[in-house]
Image 1 (tube, one colour):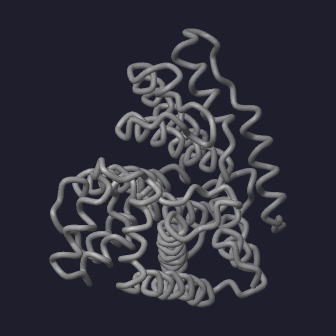
Image 2 (cartoon, helix red, strand yellow; image 1 turned 180 degrees about the horizontal axis):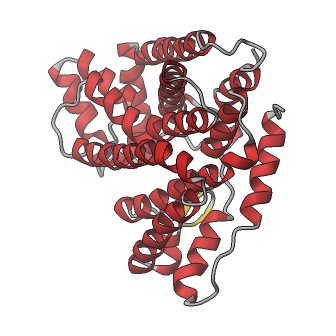
Length: 324
């Protein structure tokens, strides 16, 4: 049986609500409960379960792996917030802000162990096939985070370097989840590789769209505009702008967020004016469309037929906020 996206999410949330977490020591486990119940789109476990069902597997049998990837994802967020000194996560105080860095580190470590405990609930023959995928995915996320931190002090980041970084930091969890789902369902190696590529391209499109919305989004939809600009963050728009700019323009792009003689609104306006002049919004939109279309093309090429991939296609459209 193939469930809809909404039903898969419902099944996963029910499983998550049944997750047993010890009460003591409180400062170790309370932050885990807090972070896991903090909302989130549950994109990775939903994709894993949808993929498993598309290839003829069962959501119930794949659920331990879905739990593992969601706990792992939330573990990375705890540690990311420490590295970023982030006070807010999903609209409420981060674990780092609420309990401090030491608690966030240790609770994050416990979440990583918990992720592997969930994974260990798979059947032995399944675990042997899935563990290498999970480990590779986990290391790639760490590699992506390191590249992202390296870019903070790097004079020039190329478009190729940036795409590789977000492929590791953002896409790896999506593509790893999809491949785990396919593998658990007994998909062929060829189909598993294709579904991995589908999720990779989709993840790239998703991150590039997120980059663009930070500068060109609609605040009425809850997206605060210009945060990346004020942080001087290397995004696809900034990398594209730097590659197209004159040396004088590059200096403006490099230094505007550091200026103390103007307010934040002016800083954002100056950088966005350069973005407009250099046509980086259009370049970003083209890249988003390219990656999204590639994802759907790869999905069309798997051997199981369109009727079994309909909910994966719906997942892709929903992720990108598209109606068709």
